[in-house]
Every structure is written in C-alpha cells, then in structure tokens.
Image 1 (tube, one colour):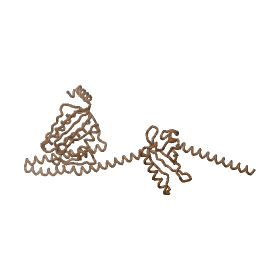
Image 2 (cartoon, rainbow, N blue to C red; image 1 turned 180 degrees about the vertical axis):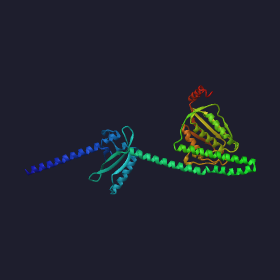
Image 3 (cartoon, rainbow, N blue to C red; image 1 turned 120 degrees about the horizontal axis):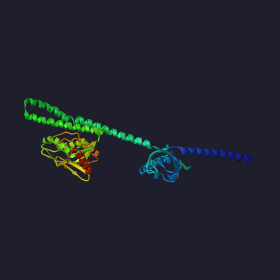
Length: 409
C-alpha cells in the first residue's frame, strides 16, 4: 500500500510537471508565432532546424521552404565571407577560454521575390555536455528602414563635404583670380588718366585696350562663377526651346571677333544656313562662349580658330578647332574634374577660373550630350560636343514657323 501511495504521488507530480511543460511550450509557441522578429535555430552545420512565422512576413517564405536549407543559401557572397570570418574569430577566442556575449551581425538576406532585406541577427551557440557546439539559436529583425536612414545620412554627409569643398573653391577663386583683372583695371585707369592729360593718343589707345581686356576677363570670370554657383545649388533651370544653332554660333563669333583681333587671330565659322535644335539657349550660349574664349586665350598671335558642325545618326556635333599651344594627356585627364581644378594663364597671361569647362560639361550633359577634346602640345586643340538632333522635329519646327509667317526658308 505504501508503494502504491508513492507511485500515485510521483505520477501526480509527473502529470503536474507535464502540464507545466505543456503550458511553457504553449507560451513559447505563442511568443515565437506572434513575435515581430524571426526566431530561429540552426544545427552545427548551419542548417535551419526551426524558424518562426515572422520569416514569412519579412521574407515571404513558407516555413517548410526554409527548414532544412543552409544559412549560406540565404546570404550574399560578402555576407557569407563576413559571417564566416567573424565566427572563426569568435571560436578562437572561446577556445582560449574567453566568455563572449551573444554575437550581433548585420547582413542582407534574400526574399522569396528575389529582393534583399537587411537583417540584424543576434546569435548564441549552445553546447552539449562535452562543451561541443551542437547548434545556434537567435533572433533576427528587419532593419531595412534603419539602413535607409543610415545610407541617407552618409549621402548627406558626402554632399555636405562636397558643398564645403565647393564653397572653399569659390572663395579661393574670388580671392585669387578675380583680383588680377580688377587690379589691372584700377592700375591702368590711373595711368590712362595721366596719358589723357598728356594727350598721348598712342598710349591712351594701348592702355584703353588693356583696361577693356581686363574688364572682359572680369566679366567672364563673374559670369562663370555665378552660373556655376547656381548650378551647384540646384537653381539652374533647364528650359529647352527651338533655337537656330547657327545663328547662336554667329552671334558668339561676332562678339569675340574684336577680342580675337587684338591677338591677330582669325575666327572662321564654316557653319551656314539655318539649323533648328531643341535646346536651352542660355546654356548653349555659355558653352559656346567658354569654348571660343578658351580657344582665343590659348592661341598665340596670328593663329586661327575654325568652328564646324556635323550631323551623324541623329546627333549634332559642334567643334572648335584652334592652332593654340595644345594640351598634354595629363592635362586632358584633369580638364573636367572639379577636384583637380586649375586655372592656366593664356598666351598673353589671360586669367581664368578653370570653371568654364566644368560648366560646359554639366550643361551639355543636361542636354543628354557629351563633350570631348583632341589635342597635342604645340599643335592646337579641338574641343567638341554633341547634342541630340532629330531631323523630323527640326523640319516640323521650320514648317510651323513658316506657316506663322515668322520664318521663311
């Protein structure tokens, strides 16, 4: 009878413990199945033996699609490399008797639709009685939004760095390059006053030309600085319209003819007729102005500048050829980079900001075009740029204008 009582009590205790275990399992199941984070188990070979339903919400996989798969099948190559290296490092420290907290990793895991999601995984190894790792368990959470914010902060930091560099470059140009033409204007104006008093006509003409050239340099510098500052702050508006590119080239040639004459440079414009393209007139004006003035600046006395245009495969190419000093390959490589911005004096020590070609590149790219240069030292340079050109659109534009009585071709 005493034995039966002991058996009954042990049975009751066992039943109570089973009930408590069932309640504990139900509680654990309830927690894992309703957790917003993914709870998982891996065996010692990194094969998934359990994964909670949250994985379906985050990655889209059904539970049976994940159980039995390798962890490595869910990661990018760089994620696998990072995780293996980190795990080997941890195992080395554990082998030396160090007690380490749970490991935390950030990695991208694949989703069922082929996309990738950023996961933060907290992992812990578990051991058998011989202190041998038999598997891993842990929790993973979706940190995609946090990653987006972090990447946005990095981008903003880089943009801020670029803006600070732009500001420093702007002040450097203002302090250095603008000072020279204004010093010339002020200095030679004083000399000119003396020559006027002395009625020295020849000297008056010489100094007046110097002042005129210096004023023109200052205006070019200021124009480039203003346009560049606007483009860097996003205030440059792109307003394409139908314009006669040949007429615009002619206007710029006429404007620079007087300046070219002072160096006995001949500008030959071989474009002719009427050619309409859809482009931003102000930007094209800036491009032509900079390329022509650069050609004059680096062409010695008695040189030549040729301006040509050519249409090929719906692309218009405009080229400015000069017989100037030319460029080395090293100089060509640095031409369109703000990081290596340099202002090289012209053949008569003309000043510049180095911004002209940067502006040209930005404005041409806004038109979906490209800019390039062919040059050889002491043999001149050819700067060319392309613009989209649709013959049918141009013909329609000419027809519409002719019908309105505005243009007769």
